[in-house]
Structures are given as structure tokens and as C-alpha cells.
Length: 130
Image (cartoon, rainbow, N blue to C red; front, side, top):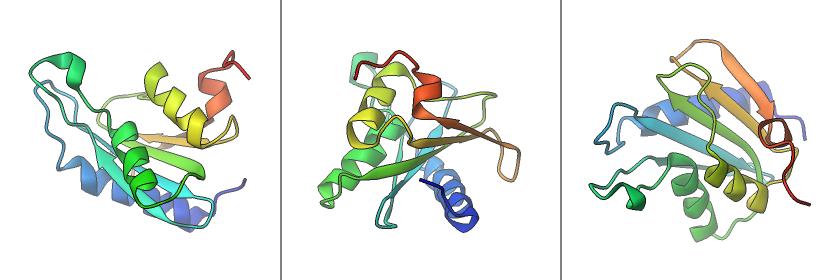
């Protein structure tokens, strides 16, 4: 599915806005915004826990917010993090594949207004089981 430029801009804007609420113990704040097939936007940020196995990644936070609102049709994910080439981890990609597809768009930006890297989920996890 092709994503309109205005939706991509809104996704990135939301991701940077929600990133400010990230609760981190380490150096990397992450914001995430997602878009559903029907045009609904949802957001999440990373929430870290002192026992690191309990950390909630921004992508999972956004996806569970989407599901809580009754949606399960993910088409695009935008990630805002001040790190070059920052993409979802394997666990977050599992969530993206579950509610999106191998064609889900994944956008990554390391600075507001900076260049945007665009991937398909299958590019980030090319051997994902079908």
C-alpha cells in the first residue's frame, strides 16, 4: 500500500512528539507512530524498567495502543530516535508482521526534519516465516 506524503509527515511528527515522553534509563529515547489501513494514527514511546527484561519498546507500545482501540490493520510505522539507521529489533518486527504484513512500510528518522529512511518490513527481516 502506498502511503501519502501527508500521512508520512504526520507519522514522523507524532513520533517525535511522543518521543519526549519516553522513560529511559539508557541514552536512547524512541518515539513511534503507526498508521492503520483506515487512516487512524496511534503512538507509543519506549518505557524502560530497572530490570531491563521488562522494557517496553516504542513500537510495541504503539501497536498495543492500536489494538486497545479496536484496530488490527497496521500499514506503516514511523520511528524517531537520535541514532543513525535505527530500525525495529527482531521482537518489534514480529509485532509488525503480526498486525501488518511483509509490505508494511517502516520509516526511520534520526533528527526532526532530517532524511527519512524507508523500508518494507520484509527488507528488515527477509527470512521471516510465512
